[in-house]
Image 1: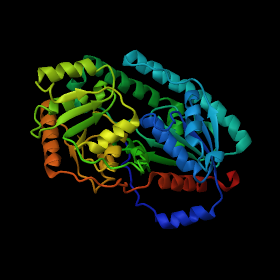
Image 2: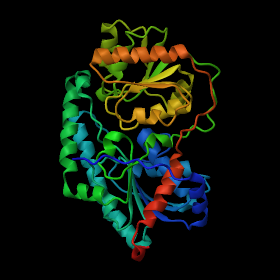
Image 3: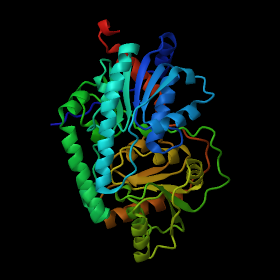
Image 4: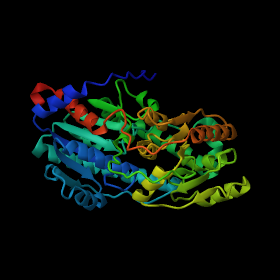
Amino acid sequence: MPVRPRYSAPRDPDRRRSERLREPALRVLLSAYACAPDWGSEPEIGWQTLRAAASRHDVWVLTQPRFVPLIEQGMAGEPWAGRVHLEAVPPDMPEATGMAGHLRIHAAHDRWQRRAARRAAALHERVRFDVVHHCTLAAYWVRIGVAAVDAPLVLGPVGGAVNTPLPLLPELGARGLAEELTRRLTRRLIAAAPPVRRSRRGAAVVLTQNRETARRFRRPRPLPNALCVDLTGTPAPPARTPTVVHAARLVPWKGTRLAVRAMRHVRAPVSLEVYGDGPEAERLRRAARRWGVEHRVRLHGSVDRAELVRRLAQASAVLHPSLHDEGSTVTAEALTLGTPSVCLDHGGPPEVHRHWPQVRSVAVPVSTPERTARALAAALDEVLAAGTTLEPVQKPSVDYAASVLDVYEDAARSAPASAR
């Protein structure tokens, strides 16, 4: 039976900051399978974690070969760049979709973790790391290559335990349902492997993104990885527009069809602006026509991050009814820009909401697709009626970079005296 997670009160940040100034830099090994600035949610998390670690410590980074030049470009001119040592570990993740693609992606990831284990062990013989951190694609059920290093392991922020709610399974469609079942079976099989179980148990500190994943560990620390969002310096738009933004890959589990369904019941004179590409696009267009909302739903395809941030800042609200999101960077970006957010009360997005209490947000209880769509529409009408002023960038209640640095210190102190 899973042990109920315990959430500790945050430490005094001023005391911890003064301690950091007195302590020598650590040697940190960072396993960042995805890591690059402005390249999507998971690579951005790896990038922001790297920035946090290198702001104080010497960092060796294991990542995919394709990300090395992007990291080097992003570090150019940074005062901490000299403390970063990049280690390219093949293979790159393949581009794939569907059930077969799902299995190819995880096979490639598992090969990468095996190779990362060998590279990490060789580096440790030379460097002798103080802390090892597995930070991206950090699911509780995957192999953790750097766990092979005999040094305190920081795991996370971890996700992977959120499933599509049973009442909303019909929203996935036949292909989406098959992918969901494949995903659940794959996770169960891999999570049961002895190396995976050992690495979970051996972590010195576990950071978790949501309560579903926290239940998998004995003493988790809550830290949604979406808190790493950095939009400092983003200019405020001249005015908000009567638009609701939904930004996601167009795959069944992102809940875009549920967002389109909700527009049947939204009374406010707004349009749903969808940003993202994927195999669901035509299915979404058919649904919009069938429900008579094609004039209120526009699919724009993919846009670069700067353009998406501009659209989020102008929007009257963001709608993100994802069916099993672990965190939700786009929700964090919207709240940072002061844009109200509506999501399902399920998985990671409502955890993200709690860190921006100063921005209006609503998490809707899960029910049948039609009842859930009506509840989403009512929530949108509520936040739209309240109106939103244009505000400076809003900071979350917890600083992601400072939290990472605190965790490294705690993990390093957990090592036996003989290993320091």
